[in-house]
Length: 160
Ligand SMILES: [Zn+2]
Image 1 (spheres, helix red, strand yellow):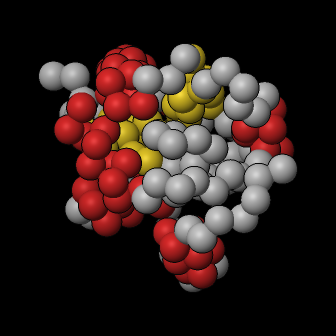
Image 2 (cartoon, rainbow, N blue to C red; image 1 turned 180 degrees about the horizontal axis):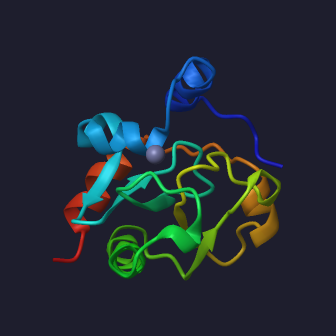
Image 3 (cartoon, rainbow, N blue to C red; image 1 turned 120 degrees about the horizontal axis):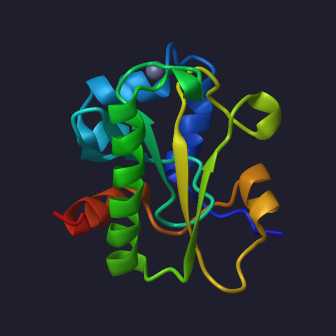
């Protein structure tokens, strides 16, 4: 079990989650990098931090288009989402030195997706001795490092 830690960004998110209208990915796409915790933007897709991180540096890669079905993505979107995930691993490697990664699509609410109508690929860094994959996808851990700092570090370390 994870002990509860003070995490201002989570309190803020939980407090506003009910009132938040619309899609968090579309909101992040339209807003500033800092406000939306956007780490990287590309022509067809972009990368943002998960505000409910399972580990430091947990990112999500989403197509720019608001698409709810994986099969609706076109070839360029599929390619760029995965290219960005690969580059994200490079950024994570230089900042956090994880020992492995989980890449996963949570499709549908039963599979654990919080947002079901804008597909996104989770990129979760892993270390020996951290939690198993299923608990990782099912529970939320609170982290000591503030998301603002994580976003800045990963954006600066992004492979060119
Ligand atoms: Zn959307």
